[in-house]
Image (cartoon, rainbow, N blue to C red):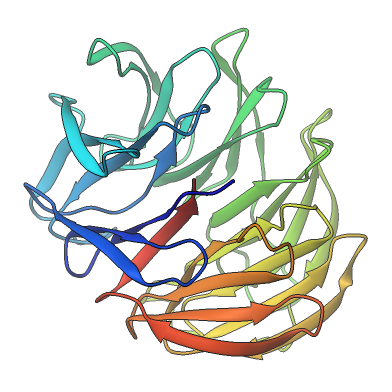
Length: 323
């Protein structure tokens, strides 16, 4: 049973804790340095890891940080800080069952393997594409996938400890440009596919993880033109039962409720400005979306495919997770 919801408030540089049923705020932690961005939970859901990215955003991070906060979830307290030394601008992270923490640092363009118990960097790998920003793992932990702001998707084999493939994020040249990378990504619950949203075309790229190749491309409709000079972040998450895929588009203030059995069966919902984070309560019926630019937590009924409530949500939450 979930005991809480942890949220990373990037705008206020705070970590917030909410009651998992009522979404009432229970506790707030001030970050010791700037600025909190992403989030990963340990596999036993005892600890959370929050990177200190720096005081800017991608492409304008003039004072990058190089640390990761370790949060004990039961105590709702920061219990350690991992210093990454020369590896600045840590962002996307994922924890694996062997106790390792995998982190991408976008300025040096590195993938790090960290032993958080000993606060030690075990290995460093060169990411293949510029702007490595988010990382996800397959359910069987055979591979990691790294999305890049300005390049192709990369596959990393965890047993071989090596990058083994890239998947083009370029378009076909027929409509809406040639693509410029990706950000949001998530594996399907069965681990057979990876779903990625490209930055330019706002399309779902369906990747066969056995061959590491694109097998389908599904537009999120309606397509909205956005400014290439601004963040075009889009994120994805499957519901706990695996029946629904939720996508958010920061630039357009839209979300999509998508049938996981048919990605073309979509319901579009307008949300408050700047939707980013997605989390699923235990009720199995709803999703929570954080609007980074509006300080709002929006509840969506997944069965009725409509917004049912909105609550105060800090100054600007980027990501959330129930634990």
